[in-house]
Image (cartoon, rainbow, N blue to C red; front, side, top):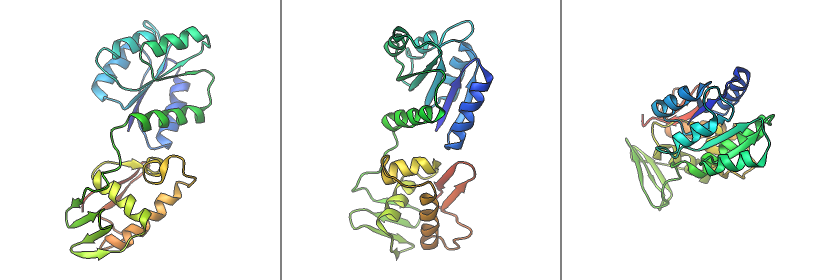
Length: 227
């Protein structure tokens, strides 16, 4: 998923984009209102982190302009802690508001929380059969076959494979997979995803060390290619 970061202070942009990329997000950035609006239209980000204090036009002006044509989630940043500023931002259509200086962990948590509420990608229907090439996932029978060969999977392996195969071609970070497959409140580590991917490769790939279905996207996460 892509996040547009808008702030006229380069160090803040660098810190935020660095941490977003660590979490598996793509990023684009702007340092003024005009560039922000242009990028919002051309890049179509999934979320915008928007500073209030920008040169020429404020973040409030940008938020007002964007809301005429877009419902992209917006988190506003400001150095001013007055309640009236927060109210104005929310009334203009911002989804959240955070005051500088802020904890980067808190900002990342808010980004993930908003995207969980707003993103359209969901777990596939419990009754929908998934077919990708010669791989068939039947959730009603809880069966997976590859080239008509039945594959025995654990419940979590089954859920992970079904989710990835249902969104073939889309890349998901480890944290995103943890949130969607294990649940946002589950206490598990990122490495859990790596382990389950390895187990799945051993069961559905012809040559597990050279996978053609479950692919690693370096620095981002995993995707299902269909092989």
